[in-house]
Image 1 (spheres, rainbow, N blue to C red):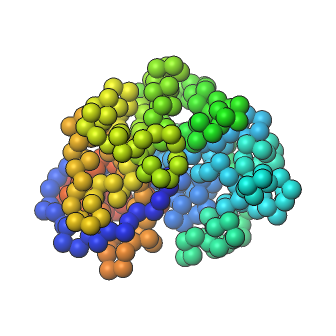
Image 2 (cartoon, helix red, strand yellow; image 1 turned 90 degrees about the vertical axis):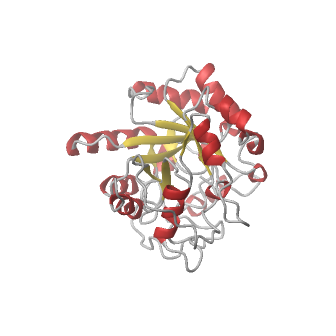
Length: 329
């Protein structure tokens, strides 16, 4: 996912106490508010904190193995520049696709930083323990085993990252992900899994060309992010949302797309999506990136009571779980 929530002033937006169907708590990159994102430890903590679904961003290694990383790049979450200084591309970045699984496994994962080494969320994990990159199958196994032992049904929420870029590099990431899902019996609309992607053309390809049966979510970015060739402005119109509903089960919008930043009023996107039969799972609630003077409760009241979203990506699973537990049903 891109872009932090929230340049929102939420005061005065509290809605009345109402009951609603229990929304989903989606652990964004695992328990990334507490441990380095997408690691096995982060996934385990998200499970323990009560997430309904745990996200896995998927990219591909040089030897064709799906691994769990938020970006196609390695330099902001690992020591790759120190370990393999000569392996950067002409743009100065280090790409997961240029490294074998064994090489990726040799890297040390750290809290997300800028390319010049400054930790992005300064109060998050500050230790130097040996975290490593996980494969997609390792995370599937981990969650399955925890579900078995604790009698749970915590779901998977993989994102197919940059499919157009991967295909330009000669790698069909969607085929690899779908093969992995089918190997584990997860290409099934009745299972606790959603597959998400920013690329609308690829979402259509998943459904029609690759025969995906799994629930699909269309992520919504902004056109100037360069996330994919998709025209996100057009995709938020009633006509396109109705078209989208023929292949997908929901949308994953950036939270400011749901609220007008000037008037602090709903943009109407949630209602448009619901009218089209789509669920709405926005990103990302980060309690350490809220505007000054705005509380967790005010933010979550806006999202769940005023906007009536169906789920929420969060770096802080426990905060959202506790909030929902305190609401009347």
